Amino acid sequence: MKPRATVASDAGRTDGPDPAGDAGADVDVRRSGARAAGPPVPRPKEKKAEEPPARGGITRRLRLRRDRTLILMTLPAMALLLVFNYVPLLGNVVAFQDYDVYDLGITGSPFVGFDNFTRIFQDYRFWEVLLNTLVIFLTQLILFFPIPIAIALLLNTIMSARVRAWVQAIVYLPHFFSWVLVVTVFQQMFGGAGLVAQWLREHGHEGFDLMTNPGFFKFLVTSQAIWKDAGWGVIVFLAALAAVNTDLYEAAAVDGAGRRRRMWHVTLPALRPVIALLLVLRVGSALNLDFEQILLQRDQVGAGASEILDTYIWWTGIKTGDFGYAAAAGIFKGLFSVAMVLGANKVAHMMGEQGVYSKK
Image (tube, rainbow, N blue to C red):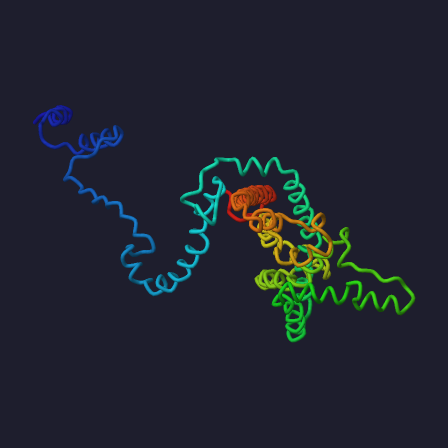
């Protein structure tokens, strides 16, 4: 019998399995990061990237079938918009022609290039009228634009729904009056033979006639616009106030804010986006004053105080048959309005508001 040490050494030289050796090998394999011998582990199948669903969850064909009734309902409105708003734009070609409406027409009138625009820029009267239009617009913007906001805030503080409805109806009613009726009412009130002038004469004072005062004309047309259209603007601001969360008012009241504080810190910030949007739109229509309102009072105060761009185009262009000049002035007016909208919208973006379109 061999000694124990010899047996152990002989066992170490055998080719059979050695548990201690296998354990050491496993340790070495784990340390080296290699995978241990064994059956291959099946890998999970990779999921294919799911294709994004169609827009709206359905195809375009199915959307057309689903919305065909709504599309048919909008076709008449789209046709009216196309016929009365976009097709007439083709007539702007007369701004580049020596247009003869009676004999030659659009197809036969000779092209003159930018001669009509040159006439506009060389006409000093055109620039005087443009300046007068902007002065009247700024007067209305300063005096008329805040009035609907103030009325909306006042109506919002009235607790009784019935009283609020009656006041809103009374303020909104003049919007349905024509400018002929509005000018007539102001004539009967503030004219030389109006009620105010007669009352002053009866009490020993000298009467006045605001309807024929050229210096007061811009304030006169502004007061007429306020009386007629202030109620129309109130609707927009009341709708914005209705969307304000009442919890904000309650939280402000709990914090000790009074009525003025709640209006300044809750109500006005809620109206700020609407105010910015309407202000941008208002600036864009700076040259679109009410043609009928000015034309009805043009002869009473004279063309020097009442002439605006629309009445000037009508008088010097359409009434005299110079349609090329009138079309060129109309194109200039449109481009000027677009520039005003873009500028006002840029200012709205600088103030942190969205304006007409959001900033990308």
